[in-house]
Length: 517
Image (tube, rainbow, N blue to C red):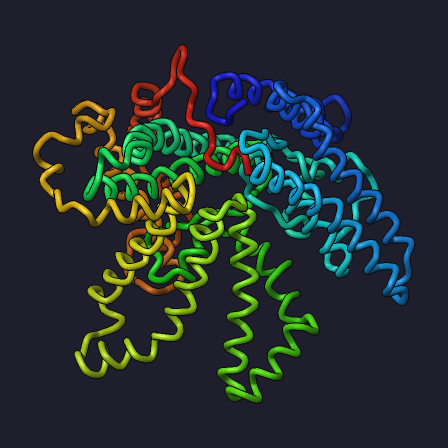
């Protein structure tokens, strides 16, 4: 049951009514039980074609709950026993994740995995590690542990929560709040706009070009790659908007997963803005612990002796980063094109960027006297970063490494910029009316993103005198306007979704690109 489907909206309406009604009958208690029941029902409906797979999130939650209970009875001085319990948690949760992905890759490419396998695995494992390290609170109840892993707004595609930061609110009483309801509904509507109006149309173009790349060489492939970069963002971030919005309507604040990533000036910044909760999880649970291992520390000592303290430390960090980015690539799918497109390529970008930074700073700043903090330099960085991201996305979208290389070869084999003016684009699945809708919708998105970015700069004190100062998000800014202006904006967005969204009989709203992760 997709988050953008009509059936889901009906389901959520019933959940919302029960969520705020039950506490009236049970003295402000029972809201979390409503969430648990709703989450189980949602998951069972989502897995109706493979009901046996619903056992796996329950099994993972039970293992986490049981091992944490055992850990609570183990003294701090019993290090060997505590580490054994941690290993058992890693074997059960990561073992299940690795097993499914390995079987899918090596034996049965069409294998259906439990919905949200990667997400609930990381959430439950992160929860266990927090408690293990003494920075998180253990839940006595198995059912509460299960809710952490199966909470329906983030079951399919995140965000990945930190239970020590967001966990308590699942079990607190939340009263009906007008602002939460309206702001949450607005966030959901924006998500619907991105997924159903923009991503669906981009999906048509991308599929036509990538699935027939021999027929569409040169500029077609570059167009398809740029369209996929936006499709991926619209599809993924739009689903996250819906998840965050409906959680907000329940009084629950989920972490942001995207903050205008296409304004990033380098790859490191891009990943702080793109799928941020995955990046934070990987740093906390893979990168930093890896730097403290005996192997890496020993390697660091050897490298420092050979290359000096500064370069030795830098090289050690790069080795740890290689493991980190390989893990990110494996998490995204495990096949070679995923490991390259979402992992190794980005590692190479970051390492090469840092290694060559002194040279390019000398060349552009000292020799060419270019203001490296000026608008031109920053604009160039944004375009350069987007180009590198698109190359990674090409590998991500390709069917294999060989297909990706074929696409890259085809992209430079023909010089055909005339396709943008000779009507050729009308052969990609969209007529001129649909192209018009797409371009206008993208203009709306770019305008909103620019405002959001300027709000961020104003918040951080990087610009002053902006009309957006003092507002944490665009919804607050719109809410500060006169009622006529507010409702013109709301109705305009509502009717754009209602009239322009791709849905209806026989239409399957675009499955989340991250559904099968």
